[in-house]
Length: 399
Image (cartoon, rainbow, N blue to C red; front, side, top):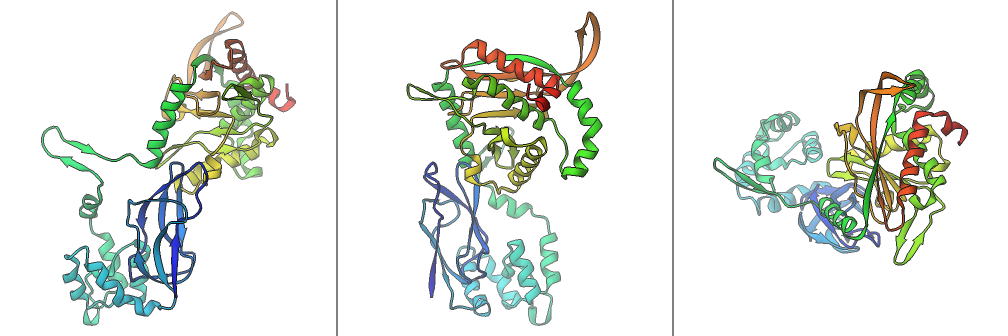
């Protein structure tokens, strides 16, 4: 029985996706729910699992193809068996790459089960591995030795760019869907919002003292490290409650006031910057916020954030300080109306009670849409964040 592999239903905000790389080749056996290929949308990378076990008999759409919801991209023969897949795999493997034929002949097309599994897990075609077993059979050790070889040649073949040699080389690389979407949204933000930025500085000593005092017990009790971002999320929520216009958004000629606080936290990933959303942040404890942020960071690195986790949000916090930034003017994430930029904490001389003292200081920057947020609300909301960080008890007492 032939079963079609289709692109899953994409969210309404995502019209199309790009196939990144097939994990299996035509003729190879696949197990039910085994990941066949990764697809990239303008928000996340999704995995497409095999709907049934069997043999991959046809790849309808190749790597790099643009696809839409429910489009057929491959076919699986559920009646075929894993044993029958080996001969089928050999022919398609040599069709696009004639150089593979000598290797296949040298090995006799036979591989031990352990070698097949290791090769499949590593994405290696066993026909490319020189076998040292009886009759040219490929052993597990042969695959291990093959993997240990320098990967310079495959990397050069896989590079999606044209490199012009010479004293002044250039390299042309196509933008990923995520980078294209980021570029589009940044231009949209700057062309549709009246963006202004207000600045302040905050003394981080109270939060740092509190963190140093309780960080070990906090991690022991809650299973997550106590960072600074959790304090800023709580402080931002407190400020947004006092100045709800900063938590609002523009829809045509209307101002939409949000009675909830969905805080976006910008995190880095191998594909670029992503902004997962902490839903109902006002209802979460500091420990719950830190757990959510840690989970977002881990899954961002693994490319496992869902589209729904990157959609929406009423306010965003970006921490350029993790990269050493001292000052920046963050760009609003539409349709939000404001964004907070954190920066590096540095010891500086400040005046307290007429005395010059050294304190760990951080510059804060809040960009806002001046169409609906006046300077007064922008400045006072940033001051409210500063006050909450400099006196963490405010967050506990809801002051």
